[in-house]
Image (cartoon, rainbow, N blue to C red; front, side):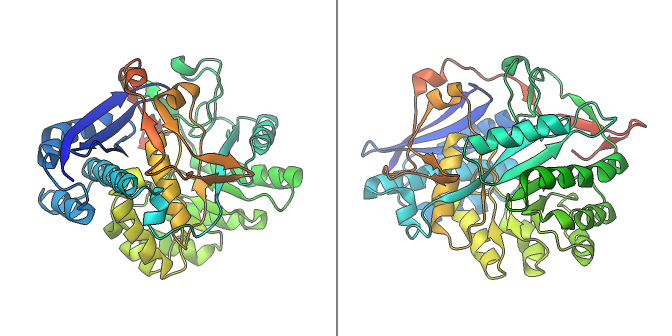
Length: 412
């Protein structure tokens, strides 16, 4: 079964997405997600100029060989652009193979290890009242685990706080996590770590008092703390029994997590900016984290992320795959199939895409009682409506960045 066509499709319904569509001489098609938030066109060029010419005529069944060929033949290995491009090819080939077998993809990955995937949503608010309303709204939508992000007194605009008027494309619509703003330049936000460290524990105390001890709560520090500040935050949040504390310090420095571990028992989740198993080697081997945060889309596809999670399983570390709206429905479907099949599944991040996105990507997954399931349609269970996608051309969009009060650019 040979690959005869490879098309890179860029569309921007509610946000920018990059999709690879492979077609075989048997007429089967497969989809892969190559979206890299704020750097989408870099992956488009990598695919169109360097990957697509290598795919025509290759055996669509040879998933492992194709992965190794694309990774090892480039010489310039790793990195988010390369690994997102390889991921798109990998997922598209798994989609084709499962369709050829007449099975949902998770069956080819070993079958279901559970009936559904526990998922968490994103609640946020500049004030406690706004936050409480957001938590209740997520519970009404069926979420049984909720990430809590809060405004900080004195700071005007920070990561993870929904706004009704932040983005021109979403004016009047609460959109709880789409920080990539459409425009020629990235937006500037402000930050003060000491104010944040003082405020966050009071917020979680209030949330626990309002919603009780059983609701799983998560929080994202988004790389903004030094190791000792991260340790302080983890320790101060211990009384509120978090499901996890995410990205407390820049993950490029794995040794920093040793210090955090020495001072807190709050579970740690790391890795949404990682893209290979080699990024994880030390922190998994030394058991410095509890959850792997990588996305299928950014970590070399199903083939490679499955290796990461199998390695993590040896140390009782679980999955927590990245899944906000910068992962397309194709990437989300891949995460669901992988999560359903592995033994060490932990939780799945799940933000609900907008109506425009759902009109472009026709999906077969289910969401019931706080659990996701990819469905039983052969392959990934996602079809791309090319005509609908053509209605929404690419729009320049960047993630924001931070400056401290003295003007220093800070981690975002």
